[in-house]
Image (cartoon, one colour):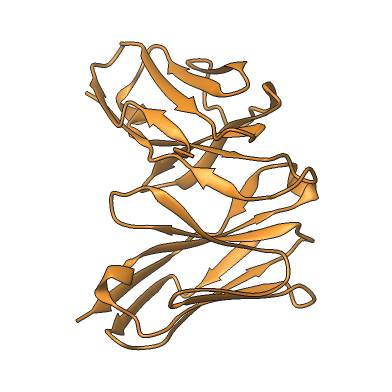
Length: 110
Length: 116
């Protein structure tokens, strides 16, 4: 079992739809990151969470430490949101490095 | 702040040649990570440094790979000799050491390496 599990693996949505990507992890963490990577592009850190909820534009990230679960929501999705979204955790158990989920490939159709 | 700066952005080289990838950290960050990304294996951590000291190099695939951090702001990843299976995108990332402050993580734009 991977330490970081993401779902779904692939997601296709129509423009304007509300999107949720889930991430579950199995260890105690110091921080959880949501990353975005466009095809052929670099990796951008969208959020870093250790508790609660953060919002940036149409993106919302939440984390429940007790349940070891985080969600990334995209409201009013747009074709430019099409990318791979990666959940990653930092934990004292893993030293200083990020442990990655497998990623969710999102495609938003117009 | 210019962010994490990697060079070159693209590199095409012949098998057997030496390749050197470069990374400049964000000012104030003291952890440096080298990752490799391929379609087959996704993102893999190769090595990371805290305060210029290599902490975990268990991801370095072979002795052909070596990484150095000659000062607090700069690192190199060298492949000698290069092989076609080394073709990948190599990312550098920097942060502050866990427990020492902001855990923000910043990635460079990556170097796309093609070995022919």
